[in-house]
Image (cartoon, rainbow, N blue to C red; front, side, top):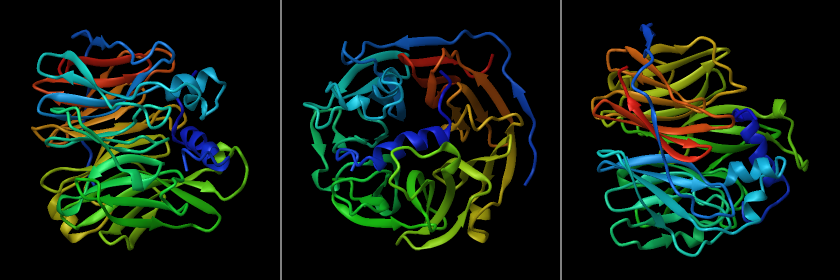
Length: 391
């Protein structure tokens, strides 16, 4: 079964929203491919439960440890013939995986305690002493790796999805679906590090559509929030046709006021480096490129400026998706695609493209770069796959 592209995944979540599940409530740079060699190694981990097939989702690293969500969503979805609620049928443990990047060794996972929902965590955000996690079906929160203490953000409700660091020490998270702590509006939730609610930034329209926010990023130079959305048709239908789901990207000031909105190019993911450099994975037709916008360019122009670096001129949005962008210590942008293609984009615009092994239905979520080695979470089995960045 092929991996779902963004429209397919939109339909999955839109189905759960529609049926009212309470728990859900510039320039050109040259590209070269890494030659064969440096055999990738898959580090497989024991699953949390024998009752469901968990796999590795979004990841984030801190102090040479890669943290990642463990979820059985995809396996249960497929086994149930496409039912997005199937993961709710079998309550299981909620674990956050850990992987030592220095030794490339799996570490004991973090047990989040008695599950507050029947599903595993999806996205994670690694702080100095806390790892934040999203429990899309239940109550999200954070865990302290050093103590094992887990705190749930009880008042926020369900439907939280992806995390990012925000302004002035805050944390941002998108609410994709309806949650019990929301009035049903799509929003960006702004939190203090302890989970105290700072603000809820509502997203509206366009007419006839419900925006469902996905990935987001904070621009420290212009003090703006970037967010991409699925635009789900307003209807009571249990299923939305794939072709009816649209997408846009929005730029907001820190108070939530919209400064820009556009649909072309389609931005799959965005990230800002410590110096304010922006990285945007953009798709136009069959062309995938990475737009790199310097802090100086950001100061003078709000959107769509910078160096456009081609990554793939035969990109299929129906079979692939850019799932994450990480920034290495040397400034390299690590672009991860569901297909297992990893693009390493250097500061000078040079590109190296790796291909990681992939079985039928496998999805790659997040890759990181450490001392010439790339390690990526793979959702299919419960694995982190590593290989040399140079062949």
